[in-house]
Image 1 (tube, helix red, strand yellow):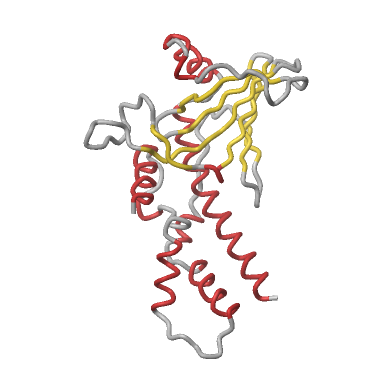
Image 2: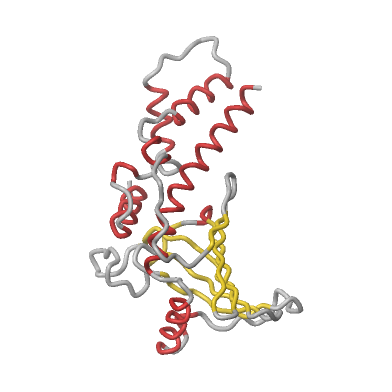
Length: 237
């Protein structure tokens, strides 16, 4: 499947987990459920709940799952951010102070998807030489110096880098219709490069990108298992 191939690209580029550890849930859940059904004889007296619970059990007990769930993600040496995370949360928050500034990064892994890795020399290319979409994570970077005005960056995390998609200033008095500036790629190329270096100086580097991808893939697998177990409990009551 294309989705599995893209996940393999994530691990390969980020030098994280071996290919056999790739999370197959969501993109391959239908396949595993179908296999579970075909491998069992239908019981005449099964209720609808029994059928669903049996399929959920099959997904929970997958032989591949423990290898990923028990994988420990090593925080890089010198990682500058404090990580705020917890079971059941769909977001991860990174926080640090830098020369009087507070940088807060919010990563919502539920919105992960496939985007073109613009400007990447390492990205996969199609037959026309164009970059193919790659697995990436969206995040919002907010930088404040203590006053109400906050500088925000819309960023996507790719296996080999972080790409800025938008920049805006935010303050409480502004309305949702406030002008947010042009698309990032419409800015002068020198200004684009300067903003990327601005974020790198605050710890948002390719090393951070690799760590986040690995961390999120493992967390997503754990949250998916927790979600399956909650479903089972609800259906078993």
